[in-house]
Image (tube, rainbow, N blue to C red):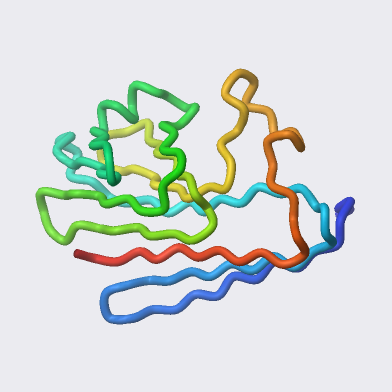
Length: 147
């Protein structure tokens, strides 16, 4: 397989009593365009009772389903809480992703995906104008913990 840039991608997973932490490290040539996303999914009750909460908004499963395959965008945030009727609730905290997208096509699971960039809304294309440009070494993390 051929890639136009040389890079190394490392993923380090650590587990503690109430949390899972995933560290990502990208070492590359300066100027390499990239997008990064992580795709955790969470089981739901299937009764549309869960709420996803950010610092300034509450999002229902119906809101996410109404968006369809494009995924519900949650921009400029590093933390989301999945509030479930059946405990435990789940908190997802990130560093350097800065965005999430929420996706599902069924009522018994949801993907809460940290992303660096949301694909262009009009065309869903992955063009360089919608990517980050590497400084040579980039660090990201996702922490999934119970509340």
